[in-house]
Image (tube, rainbow, N blue to C red):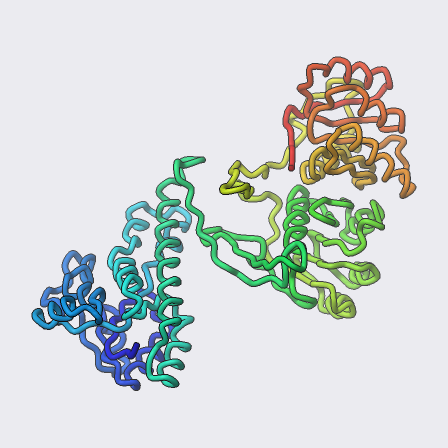
Length: 514
């Protein structure tokens, strides 16, 4: 379709100077609403204000300037309909071939801190979505443009071919309906945000990037953050070097960052296949990494490594000595970056937004034909909510290890067991169908690597239904256990711990992660 007449009504005028000038050079007549018309006129370009078509000034402060039959008839008229074109001719209406609209920035205003409700409501665009939807509905004859990213390609196609192809029209229509749907979704979410689980849940996702492949090479993949999220996995994250991030990299990166949010002290988490395989906390980041790596050096091979302190040359030297898929830290010295770049395959990420606690958001899990939705398990548990139910109360070092193990345990796939000592994981049992098998696996891992189990602590993400799991740990030298409690046989478990002269703490809170 050739473009002879264009309607333009945009809030964001960036890029409009070149687009309007390009259309004018191509002989396109420009019609524009209020502020847009003034902007185009100031560029020295010919433009017809919309009120000259409607013979009505902008009423209600411009709220209904484009909601007029002469405007929408010019958009919706079908060129291959004799009746439609006859109606336009009778009323002296010229059709539009292109409609360029971007909308009031509702979400940007609504999510501002302490924004007044009336100010947010004023940013709900009515005329813009109506024009876009009308143009998209009549996409065979009209080109709807809702993104400045399309300005250049549209001008290039018009200059090259003298018209826009049917495929371009269809692509623009799809983009327009997706744009208005996302816009309406953000408004609906804002109105329903006082309900934890509203009757209808509408998600708007925007593609941030294509990924090389999915979990396996034969699967295609892309990364879509939530459009209205205040932050997402890669927001304020800069890749300094290394290969392109993959689907599995991002999944493990999310898990690693979640572990680090549990700790204020220098910490390091190494994640493999969505499970932490080594976590360490120490006075210095280099020592925290050393602990995390020594937890399970075999599993750490090719893992995602996250640290919550600046990486300097000594730490960079240790990291460069290992095979690491992804490394993320809040900061790197220039010398550290040069050292790490010697491993060109390592994806080096700088996280400029380090926070301890995650936002209390919803957690989604895809199932056949739908979503399971729950509150995110984002809180950080402290000892004030816990109860010593067997043995003596731990000393400060004992509490430190118990809390450390407990906070790591919530990020291990269920059934989850974490054995720790001196703020270092020494054995992790993940994803077992039997809790006693998870205990056995954690203990075997610790022994295999050569960790000392005498005096260690153990955390379980859910209660022990029988004393058999705790007994395995107690026999191996574990001296303190932290678990939610709540089993019908809690008394039997407590008795086993007391008989061994050990300590047990109930958290009264479970942390399943399936």
